[in-house]
Length: 111
Image 1: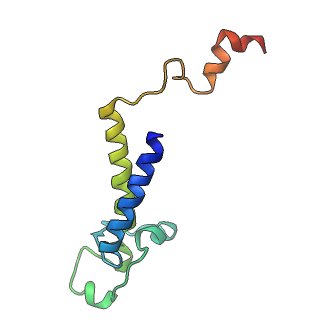
Image 2: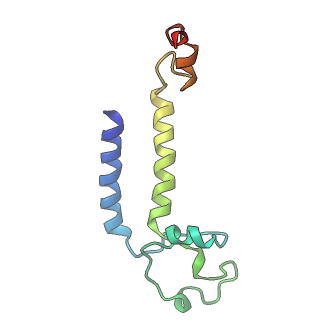
Image 3: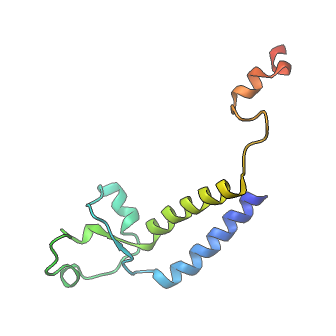
């Protein structure tokens, strides 16, 4: 249940922030990403490349522009990780080994 509530909360937050930052450049990457990742980094951007990148030495082109989606995804992943660390969310005792727990369990030896 907590995972569902967390998912709903982050989805609502995404929708609200997306209204504010849709079509805007929120970051500039220090590298040019591969074509596959450019779909995510440039998603929803609307800009005129000649106007934005005149006279800049560190920016090679509009491919380095980063939209809201990738910044949101990276920050959401780090926030979820930190919240789990602070709250001490750990797997139940005995489930630390994942699938191998069933194999090591004496009841699982019957099979």
